[in-house]
Length: 123
Image (cartoon, rainbow, N blue to C red):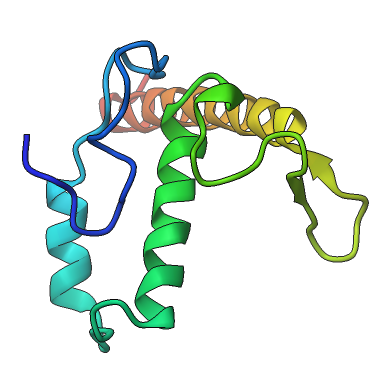
């Protein structure tokens, strides 16, 4: 598998990392769309590129790793996520919330598809 251009920690992972879907994700299609749609390409090694890739790497870990101890983009003991001035969430709370949101979205998609088919088929 080729090295990911935007996610620095995607392919240099030890074998004991626990992935949500059994292995690291593939971002080829997403990276292609991002490359085609972006309006600015940062200079290699610039602060802008470093921040862009750090955020993409963190999002990948949050979405696809199941254990906080496998994260490389944050210090799990010190991490806090603050949103709109609310109390900060710990890394474990953030990971748990992400899992809950994925379950909710999956349920909503299934229900939406069911309603669409019922409407289409007239049931």
